[in-house]
Amino acid sequence: MPKYSDDENPNREAGESSIGSEVKVIHGEKIDVRINHKKEVPRMKTELNVSVELTGSAQPRGSNRRLGVDIVVILDLSSSMSCSERRRYLQTSMEFLIRKLCPIDRMSIVKLTSTSGAERLCPLRLITEDAQGDIENMVKSLQVSTESGPANLAAGLKEALKVLNDRAYFQGRKPAVMVLSSSEATYDAARVPLRDVPVHAFAIGSDYTHHVLKEIARKSNGGTFSVLDLKETESMSDLSPMFSECLAKLLTVVVQDLMLSLSLLKENSANGAEVVDEGEIELVTKKGDAKYHHQAESDETGSMTVSLGNLYRQETRKVLVKLTLPTVKEEVDATC
Image (cartoon, rainbow, N blue to C red; front, side):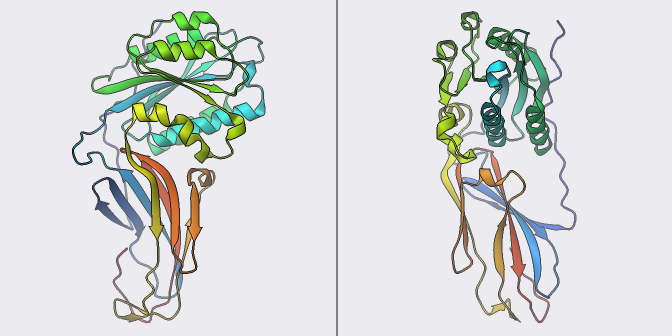
C-alpha cells in the first residue's frame, strides 16, 4: 500500500494582494481587526463595500500560540444516509467545521460505504479560503452507496490513522479523527488500535443507540461522543453547542458570544467638508454565508450589530458591509 506523504507543507507562506485597496489592521488583546476598502471614492453619493475581518489573536496575554490541528474526517456514505435530510445535515456539519479552522490547520476526508473499504478523497490540506471551497464542493458532490448494510467503520479508522501516520510534516501538530455517521457500526471498529489519537464521534440522528461510536470515542485519548439531532437543528448557528466540547479540545476559545457593532458618523460635516445628505449601512451576505451570522440587527440610528457566536484562537470571521456614502462638496481625507 503506497505511503501517504503528500500532506501540504504547513510552513509555506501564503501570498496576498491588496492592490487598489486601503487595509487597516487593529491589534487588540484578544482580537485582531482587519478592515479592507477602496482607497478613493467619488464626492457624490456612492456605495462602498467594506470587508471587516475579525481574527482571534494568536497570542493572547499569558498564553502561547496554539498548535496547528491535523484532522481526518470520516464521512458515512452508506445506505443509511439515503435520506436527503441526513445528507443535508452532513454537508452543513462539514461546512461548520471547515469554517472553524484556519490556514494553520489541515484536513483530509475519508469516505465510507456499506461494504466496500474506505477511500481517502484528499490529502491533508491547509484550510485556506480556496481549500474551504474545494472541500465543501467535494462533500456536496458525494453520492450515497446503494449497497445495504452498516458503514465499514473499521476500514475508515484504519485509513484515517494511515493518513496521520504517513504525514511528512507532523512535528508540533495535533492529530485528531472525526467520524460523522448515521448507522450502527459493527464491533470490529471498536477493536482498531487508536494509540494516542483522539476520535470525536458524531451520530447523525437518534435512530440507533450507537454503542460502537460511544466505545470508540471512550477508548481514544481525549475523544468525545455527541448526537447531532436533526429535530433540534434549524440553522448553522444551532450546531455550535453540539460541537462545542470537541472544538474546545482541539481549539481555544478567545471570545464568547462575539458581537460586532457598526455605525456611521452622524455629524453634519466630515473633517470640515460639508455633507449634503445622509449615509446608510447594510450587511451583505454572500451565497450560503447568512447561516454563519447568528443574528444581524439594525436600529433607527443606522447602527448595526452582528452576533457571531464564539471566536476561536486564529479563527477568522468575515463580515461584508455596504456603505452608502453621503455627497460631500469638496475632497475629504477620511479614515475607516
